[in-house]
Image 1 (cartoon, each protein chain N blue to C red):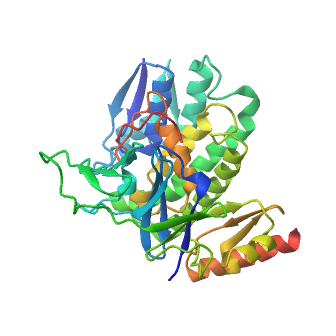
Image 2 (image 1 turned 120 degrees about the horizontal axis):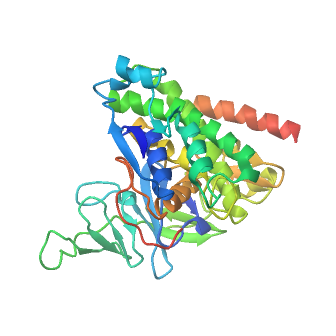
Length: 177
Length: 213
Protein backbone atom coordinates (compact mmCIF):
# COMPACT_ATOMS: atom_id res chain seq x y z
CA UNK A 1 0.00 0.00 0.00
CA UNK A 2 1.86 3.01 -1.26
CA UNK A 3 0.82 6.63 -1.02
CA UNK A 4 2.40 9.23 -3.26
CA UNK A 5 3.07 12.94 -2.98
CA UNK A 6 1.31 14.12 -6.12
CA UNK A 7 1.21 17.90 -5.71
CA UNK A 8 1.82 20.79 -3.43
CA UNK A 9 -1.51 21.72 -1.83
CA UNK A 10 -1.19 25.44 -2.55
CA UNK A 11 -0.46 24.75 -6.23
CA UNK A 12 -3.93 23.28 -6.69
CA UNK A 13 -5.88 26.46 -7.30
CA UNK A 14 -9.51 27.20 -8.13
CA UNK A 15 -10.39 27.34 -11.87
CA UNK A 16 -7.19 25.57 -12.75
CA UNK A 17 -5.95 22.06 -13.42
CA UNK A 18 -2.73 20.34 -12.28
CA UNK A 19 -1.18 17.33 -13.98
CA UNK A 20 0.87 14.81 -12.06
CA UNK A 21 1.82 11.15 -11.85
CA UNK A 22 1.35 8.38 -9.33
CA UNK A 23 4.00 5.85 -10.28
CA UNK A 24 3.26 5.31 -13.99
CA UNK A 25 -0.32 6.52 -13.72
CA UNK A 26 -1.10 9.97 -15.16
CA UNK A 27 -3.26 12.13 -12.88
CA UNK A 28 -5.51 15.14 -13.20
CA UNK A 29 -5.81 17.15 -9.99
CA UNK A 30 -8.34 19.93 -9.48
CA UNK A 31 -9.94 21.96 -6.72
CA UNK A 32 -13.74 22.22 -6.92
CA UNK A 33 -16.06 24.99 -5.69
CA UNK A 34 -16.41 23.09 -2.43
CA UNK A 35 -12.69 23.65 -1.82
CA UNK A 36 -11.96 19.92 -1.93
CA UNK A 37 -9.05 18.63 -4.01
CA UNK A 38 -9.78 15.76 -6.40
CA UNK A 39 -7.20 13.33 -7.78
CA UNK A 40 -8.39 11.30 -10.77
CA UNK A 41 -6.95 9.19 -13.55
CA UNK A 42 -6.10 11.62 -16.36
CA UNK A 43 -8.22 9.80 -18.87
CA UNK A 44 -11.78 10.44 -20.04
CA UNK A 45 -13.92 7.27 -19.76
CA UNK A 46 -15.39 8.12 -23.15
CA UNK A 47 -12.50 8.46 -25.62
CA UNK A 48 -9.48 8.39 -23.28
CA UNK A 49 -8.49 11.99 -24.00
CA UNK A 50 -6.60 13.60 -21.12
CA UNK A 51 -9.09 15.17 -18.71
CA UNK A 52 -6.38 17.70 -17.88
CA UNK A 53 -6.79 19.15 -21.38
CA UNK A 54 -10.29 20.26 -20.35
CA UNK A 55 -11.37 22.99 -17.99
CA UNK A 56 -12.16 23.35 -14.31
CA UNK A 57 -15.49 25.21 -14.08
CA UNK A 58 -15.68 24.99 -10.28
CA UNK A 59 -18.74 22.79 -9.89
CA UNK A 60 -17.56 20.44 -12.60
CA UNK A 61 -14.61 19.42 -14.77
CA UNK A 62 -15.35 19.55 -18.49
CA UNK A 63 -13.66 17.32 -21.06
CA UNK A 64 -12.11 19.05 -24.05
CA UNK A 65 -13.22 16.56 -26.71
CA UNK A 66 -16.96 16.04 -26.32
CA UNK A 67 -17.71 18.36 -23.42
CA UNK A 68 -18.64 15.71 -20.88
CA UNK A 69 -19.13 17.16 -17.42
CA UNK A 70 -17.85 15.45 -14.28
CA UNK A 71 -19.06 16.64 -10.88
CA UNK A 72 -16.81 16.73 -7.83
CA UNK A 73 -17.50 13.08 -7.06
CA UNK A 74 -16.39 11.99 -10.54
CA UNK A 75 -19.93 11.28 -11.75
CA UNK A 76 -20.77 12.28 -15.33
CA UNK A 77 -23.68 14.75 -15.06
CA UNK A 78 -23.94 15.93 -18.65
CA UNK A 79 -23.20 14.44 -22.05
CA UNK A 80 -24.01 17.17 -24.60
CA UNK A 81 -24.75 14.66 -27.38
CA UNK A 82 -27.17 12.68 -25.20
CA UNK A 83 -30.76 13.58 -24.35
CA UNK A 84 -31.63 12.92 -20.74
CA UNK A 85 -29.39 11.96 -17.85
CA UNK A 86 -26.29 9.89 -18.48
CA UNK A 87 -26.05 6.57 -16.67
CA UNK A 88 -24.66 6.69 -13.14
CA UNK A 89 -22.22 3.96 -14.12
CA UNK A 90 -20.16 6.47 -16.09
CA UNK A 91 -17.53 7.89 -13.79
CA UNK A 92 -14.01 9.19 -13.73
CA UNK A 93 -11.51 6.95 -11.96
CA UNK A 94 -11.18 8.62 -8.56
CA UNK A 95 -8.23 8.01 -6.22
CA UNK A 96 -8.15 8.13 -2.48
CA UNK A 97 -6.47 11.36 -1.44
CA UNK A 98 -5.29 13.11 1.71
CA UNK A 99 -3.63 16.38 2.66
CA UNK A 100 -0.63 16.39 4.97
CA UNK A 101 2.34 18.72 5.52
CA UNK A 102 1.22 20.96 2.66
CA UNK A 103 1.28 18.10 0.16
CA UNK A 104 -1.49 16.38 -1.70
CA UNK A 105 -1.12 12.63 -1.30
CA UNK A 106 -2.89 9.99 -3.33
CA UNK A 107 -3.12 6.23 -3.50
CA UNK A 108 -4.99 3.65 -5.52
CA UNK A 109 -5.65 2.01 -2.19
CA UNK A 110 -6.58 3.81 1.04
CA UNK A 111 -4.36 6.89 1.25
CA UNK A 112 -2.06 7.03 4.27
CA UNK A 113 0.30 9.99 4.06
CA UNK A 114 3.93 9.51 5.06
CA UNK A 115 3.47 5.78 5.55
CA UNK A 116 5.49 3.87 2.96
CA UNK A 117 5.81 6.86 0.69
CA UNK A 118 6.43 6.35 -3.02
CA UNK A 119 8.70 8.58 -5.04
CA UNK A 120 7.37 12.07 -5.53
CA UNK A 121 6.15 12.50 -9.08
CA UNK A 122 5.85 16.23 -8.99
CA UNK A 123 8.36 19.01 -8.48
CA UNK A 124 7.83 20.09 -4.93
CA UNK A 125 9.43 23.27 -3.63
CA UNK A 126 10.14 23.41 0.06
CA UNK A 127 11.39 26.35 2.09
CA UNK A 128 13.96 24.36 4.07
CA UNK A 129 17.60 23.36 3.66
CA UNK A 130 18.16 20.14 1.77
CA UNK A 131 19.36 18.17 4.83
CA UNK A 132 16.13 18.87 6.65
CA UNK A 133 14.10 17.95 3.60
CA UNK A 134 16.01 14.70 3.21
CA UNK A 135 14.98 13.70 6.71
CA UNK A 136 11.35 14.59 6.11
CA UNK A 137 10.75 13.28 2.63
CA UNK A 138 11.53 9.62 2.24
CA UNK A 139 13.24 9.82 -1.11
CA UNK A 140 16.61 9.23 -2.72
CA UNK A 141 19.10 12.07 -2.72
CA UNK A 142 19.02 12.53 -6.47
CA UNK A 143 15.45 13.78 -6.43
CA UNK A 144 16.39 16.79 -4.37
CA UNK A 145 17.76 20.04 -5.71
CA UNK A 146 19.00 22.69 -3.31
CA UNK A 147 18.06 26.23 -4.22
CA UNK A 148 20.39 28.51 -2.34
CA UNK A 149 20.86 27.32 1.21
CA UNK A 150 17.33 27.69 2.52
CA UNK A 151 15.26 26.14 -0.25
CA UNK A 152 15.00 22.70 -1.76
CA UNK A 153 13.29 21.36 -4.82
CA UNK A 154 12.17 17.76 -5.13
CA UNK A 155 11.95 16.75 -8.78
CA UNK A 156 10.59 13.59 -10.32
CA UNK A 157 13.11 11.00 -11.40
CA UNK A 158 14.49 11.16 -14.92
CA UNK A 159 16.36 8.40 -16.70
CA UNK A 160 19.33 6.87 -14.79
CA UNK A 161 21.96 8.72 -16.81
CA UNK A 162 20.23 12.05 -16.25
CA UNK A 163 19.87 11.22 -12.55
CA UNK A 164 23.59 10.57 -12.21
CA UNK A 165 24.37 13.89 -13.90
CA UNK A 166 21.90 15.64 -11.61
CA UNK A 167 23.42 13.98 -8.59
CA UNK A 168 26.93 15.18 -9.40
CA UNK A 169 25.60 18.67 -10.07
CA UNK A 170 23.87 18.64 -6.70
CA UNK A 171 27.02 17.42 -4.97
CA UNK A 172 28.98 20.20 -6.63
CA UNK A 173 26.47 22.78 -5.48
CA UNK A 174 26.53 21.37 -1.95
CA UNK A 175 30.33 21.56 -1.89
CA UNK A 176 30.21 25.15 -3.09
CA UNK A 177 27.60 26.21 -0.58
CA UNK B 1 -0.29 49.00 -42.92
CA UNK B 2 2.17 46.45 -41.55
CA UNK B 3 2.76 43.43 -43.78
CA UNK B 4 3.50 40.16 -41.97
CA UNK B 5 5.01 37.20 -43.79
CA UNK B 6 3.15 34.64 -41.77
CA UNK B 7 2.58 30.93 -41.23
CA UNK B 8 -0.26 29.80 -38.93
CA UNK B 9 1.66 26.84 -37.45
CA UNK B 10 4.74 28.89 -36.57
CA UNK B 11 5.15 29.80 -32.91
CA UNK B 12 7.48 32.61 -33.94
CA UNK B 13 4.76 34.11 -36.17
CA UNK B 14 2.28 33.71 -33.29
CA UNK B 15 4.42 36.03 -31.14
CA UNK B 16 4.19 38.82 -33.71
CA UNK B 17 0.44 38.39 -34.29
CA UNK B 18 -0.17 38.35 -30.53
CA UNK B 19 1.70 41.61 -29.89
CA UNK B 20 0.10 43.36 -32.88
CA UNK B 21 -3.33 42.33 -31.53
CA UNK B 22 -2.42 43.61 -28.07
CA UNK B 23 -1.30 46.94 -29.55
CA UNK B 24 -4.41 47.18 -31.78
CA UNK B 25 -2.26 47.44 -34.91
CA UNK B 26 -3.69 46.93 -38.39
CA UNK B 27 -1.75 44.35 -40.30
CA UNK B 28 -2.02 42.14 -43.32
CA UNK B 29 -0.77 38.57 -43.30
CA UNK B 30 0.86 37.12 -46.40
CA UNK B 31 0.82 33.37 -45.93
CA UNK B 32 4.03 31.54 -46.74
CA UNK B 33 3.78 27.82 -47.51
CA UNK B 34 6.42 26.71 -44.99
CA UNK B 35 5.45 23.04 -45.07
CA UNK B 36 5.24 21.13 -47.34
CA UNK B 37 6.03 23.87 -49.88
CA UNK B 38 9.30 25.16 -48.27
CA UNK B 39 8.38 28.53 -49.76
CA UNK B 40 10.55 30.25 -47.12
CA UNK B 41 13.56 28.75 -48.89
CA UNK B 42 12.43 29.87 -52.36
CA UNK B 43 14.51 32.44 -54.30
CA UNK B 44 11.59 34.89 -54.08
CA UNK B 45 11.44 34.70 -50.28
CA UNK B 46 15.24 34.64 -49.80
CA UNK B 47 15.23 38.13 -51.33
CA UNK B 48 13.01 39.20 -48.42
CA UNK B 49 14.95 37.28 -45.76
CA UNK B 50 18.27 35.74 -46.82
CA UNK B 51 18.11 33.48 -43.73
CA UNK B 52 14.96 31.85 -45.11
CA UNK B 53 13.09 32.20 -41.81
CA UNK B 54 9.70 33.42 -40.66
CA UNK B 55 8.37 35.82 -39.53
CA UNK B 56 9.32 38.96 -41.42
CA UNK B 57 7.48 42.26 -41.26
CA UNK B 58 7.51 45.19 -43.64
CA UNK B 59 6.59 48.53 -42.12
CA UNK B 60 7.27 52.10 -43.25
CA UNK B 61 9.75 50.95 -45.88
CA UNK B 62 11.70 48.82 -43.39
CA UNK B 63 12.01 45.04 -43.58
CA UNK B 64 12.60 43.39 -40.19
CA UNK B 65 13.28 39.71 -39.67
CA UNK B 66 13.58 37.60 -36.48
CA UNK B 67 10.61 37.21 -34.11
CA UNK B 68 12.41 38.68 -31.10
CA UNK B 69 13.73 41.66 -33.07
CA UNK B 70 10.22 42.31 -34.39
CA UNK B 71 8.80 42.26 -30.84
CA UNK B 72 11.37 44.87 -29.79
CA UNK B 73 10.64 46.94 -32.90
CA UNK B 74 6.84 46.87 -32.45
CA UNK B 75 6.94 47.59 -28.72
CA UNK B 76 9.39 50.47 -29.21
CA UNK B 77 7.50 51.99 -32.13
CA UNK B 78 3.88 51.44 -31.13
CA UNK B 79 3.44 50.62 -27.42
CA UNK B 80 2.19 53.91 -25.99
CA UNK B 81 1.59 52.24 -22.60
CA UNK B 82 5.29 51.41 -22.28
CA UNK B 83 4.45 48.17 -20.47
CA UNK B 84 5.52 45.58 -23.05
CA UNK B 85 9.17 46.67 -23.19
CA UNK B 86 9.76 48.94 -20.21
CA UNK B 87 12.91 51.04 -20.51
CA UNK B 88 14.27 50.17 -17.06
CA UNK B 89 13.86 46.38 -17.46
CA UNK B 90 15.43 45.92 -20.87
CA UNK B 91 18.42 43.91 -19.65
CA UNK B 92 16.18 41.29 -18.06
CA UNK B 93 13.94 41.24 -21.10
CA UNK B 94 16.83 40.74 -23.56
CA UNK B 95 17.96 37.83 -21.42
CA UNK B 96 14.58 36.14 -21.99
CA UNK B 97 14.58 37.04 -25.70
CA UNK B 98 17.87 35.15 -26.00
CA UNK B 99 16.32 32.31 -24.00
CA UNK B 100 13.45 32.25 -26.52
CA UNK B 101 16.01 31.66 -29.26
CA UNK B 102 17.24 28.66 -27.30
CA UNK B 103 13.66 27.38 -27.17
CA UNK B 104 13.44 27.72 -30.94
CA UNK B 105 16.66 25.72 -31.28
CA UNK B 106 15.46 22.91 -29.04
CA UNK B 107 11.70 22.51 -28.46
CA UNK B 108 10.74 23.99 -31.82
CA UNK B 109 13.33 21.79 -33.53
CA UNK B 110 11.85 18.68 -31.87
CA UNK B 111 8.42 19.78 -33.08
CA UNK B 112 9.69 20.29 -36.64
CA UNK B 113 11.10 16.76 -36.45
CA UNK B 114 7.83 15.22 -35.21
CA UNK B 115 5.30 17.26 -37.16
CA UNK B 116 7.12 18.19 -40.34
CA UNK B 117 9.65 15.36 -40.64
CA UNK B 118 12.79 17.47 -40.35
CA UNK B 119 15.97 15.46 -40.17
CA UNK B 120 17.79 16.38 -36.96
CA UNK B 121 19.01 14.91 -33.66
CA UNK B 122 15.63 14.87 -31.90
CA UNK B 123 16.93 13.23 -28.69
CA UNK B 124 19.43 16.05 -28.26
CA UNK B 125 16.77 18.69 -29.00
CA UNK B 126 14.38 17.17 -26.45
CA UNK B 127 17.09 16.88 -23.78
CA UNK B 128 18.00 20.54 -24.25
CA UNK B 129 14.32 21.53 -24.22
CA UNK B 130 13.74 19.63 -20.99
CA UNK B 131 16.66 21.43 -19.37
CA UNK B 132 15.27 24.81 -20.44
CA UNK B 133 11.79 23.96 -19.16
CA UNK B 134 13.18 23.15 -15.76
CA UNK B 135 15.00 26.51 -15.67
CA UNK B 136 11.78 28.38 -16.52
CA UNK B 137 9.77 26.32 -14.04
CA UNK B 138 12.18 27.08 -11.20
CA UNK B 139 12.33 30.75 -12.17
CA UNK B 140 8.53 31.05 -12.30
CA UNK B 141 8.06 29.23 -9.03
CA UNK B 142 10.26 31.70 -7.17
CA UNK B 143 8.69 34.61 -9.06
CA UNK B 144 5.24 33.43 -7.97
CA UNK B 145 6.48 33.05 -4.42
CA UNK B 146 7.34 36.76 -4.44
CA UNK B 147 3.80 37.52 -5.63
CA UNK B 148 4.53 38.02 -9.33
CA UNK B 149 2.89 36.36 -12.32
CA UNK B 150 5.29 37.00 -15.22
CA UNK B 151 8.86 36.19 -16.28
CA UNK B 152 10.00 39.71 -15.53
CA UNK B 153 8.50 40.48 -12.10
CA UNK B 154 6.14 43.32 -12.96
CA UNK B 155 2.36 43.64 -12.54
CA UNK B 156 1.89 42.97 -16.28
CA UNK B 157 3.36 40.72 -18.98
CA UNK B 158 6.22 41.93 -21.20
CA UNK B 159 7.60 40.80 -24.55
CA UNK B 160 9.75 38.35 -22.53
CA UNK B 161 6.56 36.33 -21.91
CA UNK B 162 5.42 36.73 -25.52
CA UNK B 163 8.78 35.49 -26.81
CA UNK B 164 8.92 32.43 -24.54
CA UNK B 165 5.29 31.31 -24.51
CA UNK B 166 4.54 29.61 -27.85
CA UNK B 167 7.26 26.97 -28.07
CA UNK B 168 6.76 26.08 -24.42
CA UNK B 169 3.01 25.77 -24.99
CA UNK B 170 3.64 23.60 -28.07
CA UNK B 171 6.27 21.37 -26.42
CA UNK B 172 4.09 18.26 -26.50
CA UNK B 173 3.95 18.48 -30.30
CA UNK B 174 7.70 17.84 -30.08
CA UNK B 175 7.31 14.88 -27.75
CA UNK B 176 8.27 16.80 -24.58
CA UNK B 177 5.91 16.19 -21.65
CA UNK B 178 4.84 19.37 -19.85
CA UNK B 179 3.32 17.59 -16.84
CA UNK B 180 6.43 17.95 -14.63
CA UNK B 181 6.38 21.76 -14.82
CA UNK B 182 3.42 23.07 -12.78
CA UNK B 183 4.63 26.66 -12.50
CA UNK B 184 4.97 26.76 -16.27
CA UNK B 185 1.41 25.41 -16.57
CA UNK B 186 0.04 28.20 -14.37
CA UNK B 187 2.00 30.84 -16.28
CA UNK B 188 0.62 29.51 -19.58
CA UNK B 189 -2.90 29.60 -18.16
CA UNK B 190 -2.47 33.22 -17.13
CA UNK B 191 -1.11 34.10 -20.56
CA UNK B 192 -3.93 32.36 -22.41
CA UNK B 193 -6.49 34.30 -20.37
CA UNK B 194 -5.13 37.68 -21.45
CA UNK B 195 -7.55 39.88 -23.37
CA UNK B 196 -7.35 39.46 -27.16
CA UNK B 197 -5.41 36.19 -26.87
CA UNK B 198 -6.06 34.11 -29.99
CA UNK B 199 -4.79 30.55 -29.75
CA UNK B 200 -2.82 29.05 -32.62
CA UNK B 201 -3.28 25.39 -33.59
CA UNK B 202 -1.90 23.21 -30.80
CA UNK B 203 -2.93 25.60 -28.03
CA UNK B 204 -5.92 25.23 -25.71
CA UNK B 205 -9.01 26.30 -27.69
CA UNK B 206 -11.46 26.45 -24.76
CA UNK B 207 -12.61 29.67 -23.22
CA UNK B 208 -11.50 29.57 -19.61
CA UNK B 209 -13.18 30.97 -16.51
CA UNK B 210 -12.00 34.55 -16.14
CA UNK B 211 -10.50 34.21 -12.66
CA UNK B 212 -6.79 33.62 -13.09
CA UNK B 213 -4.99 30.85 -11.23
